[in-house]
Image (cartoon, rainbow, N blue to C red; front, top):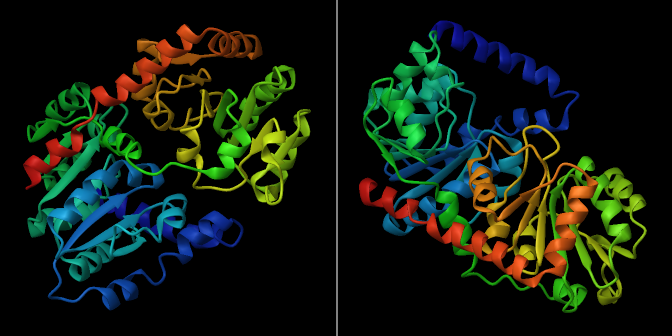
Amino acid sequence: MLFLYNLVISIAGFFLKIVALFSPKIKLFVDGRKDVFSILEQKIKPTDKTIWFHSASLGEYEQGLPVIEKIKKKYPDHKIIVTFFSPSGYEVRKNNTVADITVYLPLDTRSNAKKFLKIVHPEFVFFIKYEFWLNYLKELETSKTPTYLISGIFRNNQMFFKWYGGFYQKALKAFTYFFVQNESSKEKIESIGFHNVIVSGDTRFDRVNAILERDNKLDFIENFKNNTPTIIIGSSWPKDEALLAEYINQAPENVKFIIAPHNIKTDQIASLTSQIRKSTVLFSEKENQDLSQYNVFIIDTVGLLTKIYSYGTIAYIGGGFGNPGIHNILEPATFGIPIVIGPNYSNFAEAVQLVTLGGCIVISNHNELKQNLDHLLDDPKFLEEKSRICKSYIQDNTGATNTIMNIVS
């Protein structure tokens, strides 16, 4: 089976080069890996002590960041190497300051795994949440390198739990400890014979809770908000925006809206703007504008949404009308903002929990959107109770990073 796995990886590598001729994202994926080994050889000496963290994409990187920061502080003489699989993670965080070296992870061929680990020679390795690359894990097991999975999630549909998944199960022998998010994941991994597992919780809670200690001030948002109730619309998609535009157009003049779409391409922003009849300004056009005179502020850039949430009265999080579902609800929750989402959220444990607790409201159509947003805006006690639930939920679930560090150290 490992032979077939390696064959598939090799074939995929070949076809990705062809697809890269037509797809900008795949081109980043392919081109970004061309110089990885030369970069590593230039920046890592044989005598260097290193620690390697791997994340699939941006969300996993943010999830692992509390542990990366703690490890960096505990081992200041080690070089921190961060790898990404996806361009959507690497391109956004390639200039992060916590890692000494940030690169794409070379495709999981046997030769790449051997070469990568020979150059990097990590003292510890951390995989964040998922991505189990068999050749890398096999080499790590062979070298007896301490290897940890942090904020892991295990589900029935994963390869490990299929009748044909034995060769994937063997790869898990590389892990010194599995730090998983919940009891269900612990039971799943124990059911196939692994007992070096600890329920640590989700490090994302530590990550978002730490946001409160940072400077979240944005003068231009304060100017726009102008002490007015403000609904933050985060990571919206066209299906979300169609419902929201209808609500915005009917909303009272004393309510403002900040929209940070998931897709900020020019045509998508133009489509969104065309649906809104209220006075609207774009972030890219805000200079020399009296922002307080506008009702809608569209953020056609990236990297600001987390701070913007701190100014919200209510947050609508997009993605719930599509697949795979909603985007990050933990960032608005940490600021104690009631959250409204679409119906597709069942694959996200934090959303299921927060809906059950009552801090997050699910809507399926425009009437439900209007009814719930109006209720939140018109009933201060209802708004306050939802806010309290969201804030308490974050605070009650912090501590995963300390649990991990107590074992790793």
